[in-house]
Amino acid sequence: MSSPCLFCRIASGEIPAKKLYEDDEVFAFWDISPQAPTHFLVIPKKHLSGPEAISAEDEALIGKVVRIGAQLARENGAEHCRLAMNNGAEAGQTVFHLHLHVLGGRPMSWPPG
Ligand code: AMP
Ligand code: ZN
Image (tube, rainbow, N blue to C red; front, side):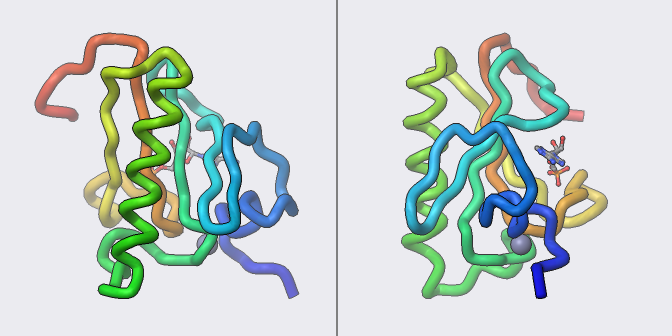
């Protein structure tokens, strides 16, 4: 039976996405509703519902997600970028598979809305 999780299904190739990067642990794809000229998502293939679900054994994996996010940003014209994870519905999380937003290509304001 396939996973009910949208991003698990994207990482497995079951649902098509505009893939940017893939290895055995990490998958990156362009956001379907970009909020900046460069806006992609980096996810672990392992299903974690969000930052709250990270355990000690996942620390290297999540470090890799961040490293690859910054590297892909540099390769896609967004060396200066915002790396963001929404943690929980009130913080704006709508998909409950941990994902790193990488946004760039325009000046970023602070604080975010
Ligand atoms: P969040 O609100 O932090 O949970 O972010 C979820 C992100 O996933 C949003 O920026 C959506 O635009 C994006 N998204 C939702 N469905 C898809 C999809 N099928 N392909 C690519 N990005 C998606
Ligand atoms: Zn998932």
